[in-house]
Image (cartoon, rainbow over all chains, first blue to last red):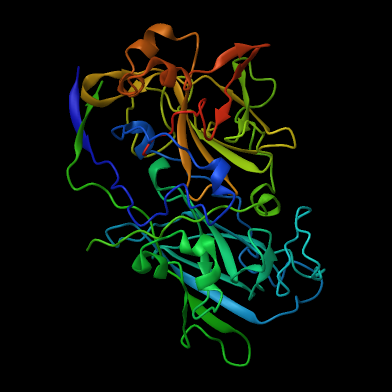
Length: 238
Length: 188
């Protein structure tokens, strides 16, 4: 017996960077040069992993409490909501973050920047969003750091975010920046998002409400994942 | 209320210590009777290996059911222990490898059946947004022939970039990011 159920695909995102942005040198050999193949969303794309449930420990969201002592740097709280493109909360979904320490150095064997490592800071965290789609991390503000893209190239301070959402189609890896960073205009990764409004969505907001007196400054950063198509497609159902 | 999505940014080179705190390359235990190995290398537009990428896969179980609430076909068995998600880094040789089971066929649009396939995401330094592709199986010729997504890729040479090769007891799926041999990537 066959009956029809209707499932909606996901809207395409148009604020994303193009694959090739020559000012960001590494894209020159790694950006595709054939057009993307267009396909309708099937059951494969509108499903996706519910990964991370049961894996997150109580202190995984607090990057300042993963070692014996406290890390050096400016303690901050970063919080926000993960929403779908229709403004609905994405609940119980894994958020992974990683970042450089306050000196601009990553705990990674590939990072050759001669800035000190901090024995009390790894810079990796994760949490699940709550019933309102909210996440919260406690960390230190990452430092800017130099990189080899061009003469005197520096990355603005940023925190990497990895999000799943509810489907394969909504998977997103991005970077959160801090307001008013003078390095924005010199950073080809930030500038690879050509639309200024879209670029602005990568910048967190300083928020006095989130700040905890005598303890930590607060920043808010909402993350919007792709929304569903309003016109469902028909799915045959055995 | 329609909201514009947060744009994508590159994963960069320094993600391993955060995203690989556990081994996610084995979707089934090594002794699993139906285990298959899916492996490959990633190459850039100059033909050089890409040693700093992350590959993720998403697939249905052996019966063809996704472990996800949107797949509510109760007549297809769900295996609660099979999440269907894997993640692996490329190593210094540009290689990645997964141990999994071959997924069953899943429904496509308009009453069609899709050939067994694994969805793939590639992230890397120099890759500004997720690259999505599909792994199909070389021993599923007939199912592949009727697969609507494969059929939508008109050029047979391009289509062949989506089919793994059988090699040394494993399914081999190399990914070329750019150039003549570029793998087909989908606008997912």
